[in-house]
Amino acid sequence: AMQASTLSGCVSAASAVVGAAVGRGGDWMWAEQDDAGSFGHIVEVVTETQWVRVQWSSGHTNWYRAGSGTRHDLTYTSPYAIGAAALSLEDALRTHKVKQQHLKRTFGYGAGVQHAHFSRFDIRDEICMELGGFIHGTRVRLQHRGGVQMAVTIGVKCDGNDSAPKLWFHCDNAEAAGIFERAEMLKLKEAGTQIMTERRRDEFEAASDDETDNRTVIEVTSPSHFSFRYPMGRFGIKPTLFDVRDDACKKLGHFVHGEVVRFSHRGVSEKFTVIGIQLRDDGLPALFVHKDGDEGAGTFPSNHWAIFRPYMKVVDKVKIQEMSPEDVTAGQGTFCDLGRLCELRSSLKLSFRYRLGLGPCVQAGLFDIRDEVCLVVGGFVHGQLVEAVGGIRATVIGVRLGQEGLPELFFHNEGDPGAGIFPQYGRLQSKFKDVGFRAPKELTEEDANLLEEGW
Picture (cartoon, rainbow, N blue to C red):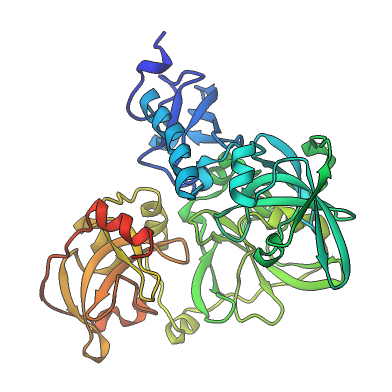
């Protein structure tokens, strides 16, 4: 049998060995499940279906394709790379840049002050001290105008609203752990220690973080099933195709197309109608709903749907009016080949580094600049100089996932600090003119690091 330390290349079920170190591969489509680019180890292999289960450095596990559908989500990682990752923690602590990939979330506990669910925390002393100044089990006291708030330090994990690691505390009388505001953190005082008992998943009614099985996602998601026309967007309506099959909706969201659901918990009551499945901002499918008062369909943040589900109840079932082709033509956007875009989503080759962003927070972004990809997504190729509506000139940079989780063509307008997209590009594309060629200058690794540091 092949040794785990000698494996290289993409992970296939035929070659996979339990214990082998792996990282994201060429067909990766799972957002930040790998702790934003960290490594993990194979813990189970199913050769019949060509899937492998991986435990990431943070502690959570999920299933990944190792030949299923000819896709390979993972690649083998060398022991040297693991050592480099371990050293990077020392660098991160020294430079105060601890990120998601540095965490080892091994301690099970409840998270969510109002909507308690199971999660895991990094309770290592050096991580807790770096992120908040207290170690696991330390009692803290917060003095404020309303009196005194006591809490115990749990550990570090990322907040559901962003990817930044934070130190979490369990306040006395709260359902589970939460985070203090920055101003409150500065006022915390040590007030003793407390022995903490680890919690189990089955102690919580609500789902845990990272609970959706990737095999289920692939099983229910096929571009050919996106067929129901409906507007997407809470404020700006964009014609979109949804998968409204009952079995698919149930597997991803436990409700079906047309059901009217009421969410009620702790004095908050909202009602929404289930539309169907589409892609989230991170490119993964999710159940979309039309909330009362919104203009179109939207979804919950990636980790909130399962957490809130115990507080939802079906109160009615209605027939939803589909958009007609006339509505689409008169609307704010046009349909492209959504099935083709869904296929491209998981096969982009992000290799060209360029400035990304139109505002003050410009960052380094990676783009797919292959001609065939750029042409399918936006009708122009990398480096093409175009004249847009109003005489604006822009250079085509390449393709990457946009806010709707689908591939979009990015342009660098003259005068802008970085690349961005044209709003309603599908409707305006026919008015763009080819006026020449201008080769974009790729960012060096040094330039990219300077952008990340805010220069």
